Structures are given as C-alpha cells and as structure tokens.
Length: 336
Ligand SMILES: Nc1ncnc2c1ncn2[C@@H]1O[C@H](COP(=O)(O)OP(=O)(O)OP(=O)(O)O)[C@@H](O)[C@H]1O
Ligand SMILES: [Mg+2]
Image (cartoon, rainbow, N blue to C red; front, side):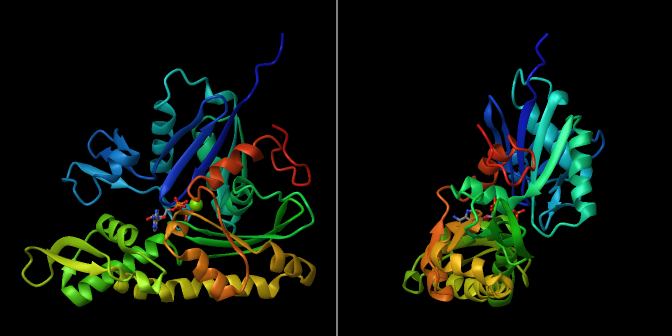
C-alpha cells in the first residue's frame, strides 16, 4: 500500500502575528498572536483578531494572553491553545499527527527556546518538527535565491524584534537580533502621550497611531491622528492629536538603533560577502517595513541599495512553505 503523504505545515509564530500554511490548503491562519481564555473553565473563547479586539477591555472572568514575547514563547499553554484554535478553523483538515512542520524563529534564540518550539509541535501532536531561522525563510519568501555563493542581507523589522542577517550558500552566516521593533515603537508612542499630553493610552491605540501616522519622510509631517485615552490627572476620558511630524521624530532614534545594528553586522561580515552586499544591498521585511519612506531612509543611512519585500508580512511563512520540502538540508535548493 502506498504510504500516505505527510501533511506539510509552515508556521511563522511571530510576537504580533501568527501565520500558518498547510500544504494543499494554503495559508489557513493569518491573525494576531493573541488568545483569550475563560478564567473559570480555562476554555479558549477567542483567538486572533477576535482576541486582539478584547485587549484592555476584559472583565475579571476573561484573560487575554500573547503567547510570545520578544520573538520567543513566553506562555506555552497560550501558544498551544492559539495553534489549536488556528487548526480548528479549517473544517476537514487531515490529521496533523502525520504532519511535518517547519517553525521559524528569530536568529538569536537559545537552544532552550528552540526546544520550546519543538515542544509546542509535540504538544500539538505533529509528528516531525524542524526549526529554522526566520531571516532565512524570509529571504526565500522575498524571492532571493539563497543557495548561491552570493551574499544577501535581510533586515526583518517585526513586532517583538528586528533581525539582521547575512546569508550565503543556503544558510545564515551571521546575524543579530535587537528589540527595537514594532512594540518598542508603540511603547515610545505611549510614553510620549503620557509625558506631553498627560494621556494614558492602551497598546492597541498606540499601534493604531503608529500605523496611521508613522513616517520616515521629513516632509510628510502634517497628517493628524486623533487619540483617545484617560487623562492622567483627572482620571476622565480625554483625547489628543498627534501629528506625523511628532511620529517622525519618535521614529528617528529607533531607526538609528536599527541602522547601528545593521552596521555592526556589516562590520563583522567577511570581505568577499561584504563585497556582494555592496551590489545586492539589503532586503527589508516584517510589518514595520511598511512605514512610508523606509526604503529611502535606509538607502541614505547605509549607502546601499534597498529592496522592500513584495509582501513584508508574508515573506517568512512563504519561505517556510519552500523550506518544508528540504527539511534543513541547507545546500540543496528545495524542490516543489
Ligand atoms: N503599515 C504599518 N506601519 C507601521 N507598522 C506596521 C504596519 N503594519 C504593521 N505594522 C507593525 O508591524 C509589526 C508586526 O509585524 P510582523 O507581523 O512582521 O511581526 P511578527 O513577525 O509577529 O513579530 P516578530 O517577528 O518580531 O516576532 C507590529 O508592530 C505592527 O504594528
Ligand atoms: Mg516575524
């Protein structure tokens, strides 16, 4: 009897967003990495978008959890619950016990953190699990042929971390992970409103302000974003207006940090690979690379050509889909 084909599963479990690909089904889940539980029964009451909408708005019987912090699992129960929720959304999904999965993680995660990802796959009952670096899958998903001796440099600015890496001959040569990323920007927005307007806002509002008004174009400063929260002094609901000029000024020092991290990786890059990067430049991916003006910003800051991934939020999971077919065999370009 012919052996049943394994179910291929690609997972980009990001701090902000969970993306799951299943062979034959496509992307089955692309929603925020958030899950809500009923405290008494322990049952999952919402996941993804629905759970994200509950952040900061729950009563005492509901708890909302983000399973990842800074790119790594910080709450294993919540991570398992969210993945289970994601798989259950697909009616008639074949048994995942016979599955083989590729989970992508930031480049500097420890052995213990990698074990946690394997444990997650085990808890899900997935037969076989591989862990690979998200800059590698992101590079493949951005359309780069990483299986040549020509270096490529990737900068993935996600929610929890910014990952900078150089790839050659199918694998990561060197990399660096820093916390200056989306959540960090949100915190700066919250700090600014608290300090300048005595306005306390939630993380969801800060994220909206960043997305609606954030810019790296100096002349793009006139857009206004209305912000609602609670006045620090009176304790009553209150509002403020933030201009994109303010957000530009908040973003600059954070992008300076990212630029410094890119420089530090370039300084350690072997000369032959550095010579390639002068030509191939850097590829940007991750949700924060959607900030207007980012390409010009890095071209000026680094003096290198910059390419923005076609779909910065999908690059990692698209690459995981490809990596599934060669399960960590780094020199061989995966077959479809
Ligand atoms: N248009 C936009 N402008 C600015 N930031 C954005 C935009 N769209 C999404 N983001 C931000 O991108 C981040 C999410 O990106 P992404 O999904 O790549 O992160 P992640 O993979 O979940 O996190 P990580 O890889 O760090 O674990 C969030 O901080 C989100 O607010
Ligand atoms: Mg990511």
